[in-house]
Length: 111
Ligand code: 5GP
Image (cartoon, rainbow, N blue to C red; front, side):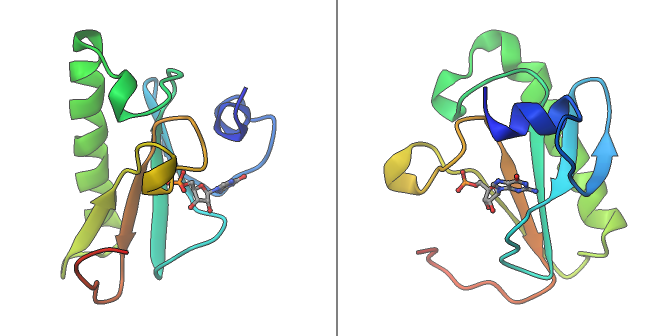
């Protein structure tokens, strides 16, 4: 079981900014920008490479939640959505998650 599953089950605390039947959004414990929220499916999926056809609606739903949160959190100037897949990409928690980052100018390419 991952730490994110414990957050989904409300077994450990998190600064939750949004929740519905399919997903949960909470502030990253180690923020890399003034706004840094993680949006995760409640379904246990390890990463992008574990997605299947059955997850299409779920992923689409998560992106609409990301859009709504970006508006609500005041990121009208721009924001970034990041998902790391696998160790080489820097994924540290094996539960699919989308970083919503904003509130500062972003560099490119990412590190
Ligand atoms: P990854 O490196 O896997 O793409 O991102 C995992 C993210 O989860 C990191 O940005 C890390 O700071 C965050 N994180 C890890 N454990 C916790 C936790 O217990 N609570 C919260 N709110 N964030 C966490």
